[in-house]
Image (cartoon, rainbow, N blue to C red; front, side):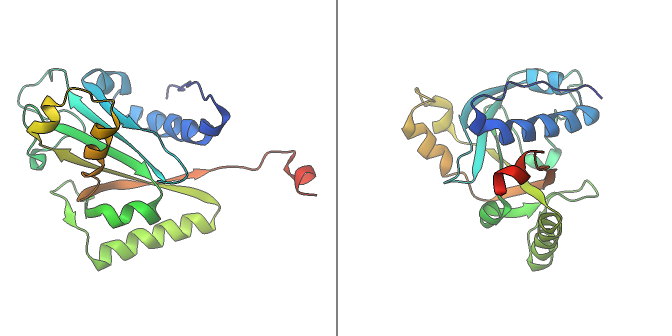
Length: 193
């Protein structure tokens, strides 16, 4: 596995940065991250902050798959992805994002499963178990956005565009949970005393 080096400045972004590095390192085992990133263009990004408890990215397919009959990661036939579609990816606190999710990926690879009481309870159970073990838990979710207005919006870095993108923070499909171990630094005992 290749080690991922990211610049984690300012210090307030350190945990988010290390989480990104860990997820990127893991995903690189499944599909080379460099190749996957090269075919997706970032359109809009909202950074994590303690108020919203999530970060999101809106991307647009910009490359060509080497196999015209296959879907490009992370797309699947059930996505109804078409030219001009956007991929909205979100990560953040499960206790916030679960309210915005309506489906969860099928672990067997089929179409997403409706997020019913049983599935929701199982996700919360895993989250609580990992949290009780001292792990920070992050929920990963996504959705396809088909909106001609977004395609034609001139200033994609404006606050107005961000407000429009926020309206798509619903009907998300849960991709999974990530548990991060955040070990205490050796000088913490001295700080606490």
